[in-house]
Image (cartoon, rainbow, N blue to C red; front, side, top):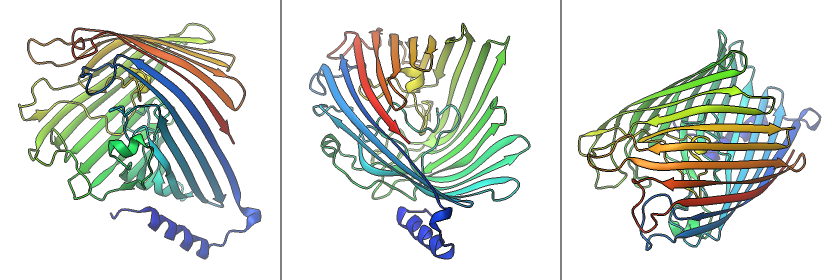
Length: 428
């Protein structure tokens, strides 16, 4: 299947317009958007580094604007969404990447046809953002400043109580990618590449108790794209169940197989087997009308020997980690790989105005070379969201990491302290 570019999508929309004229009185149009401004500060980076690589304290102001238009005519729907993500005060922070800065980019631009048949709900073609299940393998960002996009085709269907989605997508690479341009908030058009594709099937039961994901990611190097030459298959099974009225448990298990290279370096030409896994589980109880408390654990395989010919480090594809491991962006929380992290988390919602989350995790490396330390530390996290009005939300939060022996090296062995505050205005 060939890749669908933005220009091809524009031509398709134009052809559709000629074939089926749209009259103003029958066209339904909606628009929405948001503006977020956030300040973050971090004292003592989490991961070992030198004082030549980065400073002890990092501050950042980030902005994100989203504008979305949605037009419907009969069974047809067209969506366009523009996102502008920028960062300031970062002072050449080496952790600032295109995942946080992406200036004035169409993150969605697609058309879809609905109610195709008794079993097929819709067919979608174009550039899209996606949320699948827990969002641990593919998700639309909330906390992180920039968003993952994909170009291709999706088919949504229903069969015997299940919602099914088949997809064939080309992940969109964010540009520019060099540090100097990102630091200056420069703009370049994002694009996808035919030598990197993601396809598979997502299934969710009608009662949302089960979700099953399957993803094939295939990529290879080209003149424009350096890759790890991943050819990997990932399968996830997720089960949620309520019991004893106020109790709830969830378990999501993933396995990953195939082959890849250790790095995207042109000099790395060794294909290695991939055998990896990831597990999330939690069990919780509704303590009262407003508060839910749960015990949780994250575990993911990792490598202790990079020379054994097999990659055991789990690859979370295009998934998110903020809701399991803490704030991303400036804090640069732990990856969903080579980790074991049990903890507790409570969420309190008061009158739809206040949302308070408190979390604790103890963190270990899952695999380390013999004789090395594996304890990463104790992390405490806090977040308060206050709905000032129907359109304005204030947020305040932070995290504190009491570093374990595995992190007490480098120029900043002391504990990490992080805080953020922000405002988000939304409109419809």
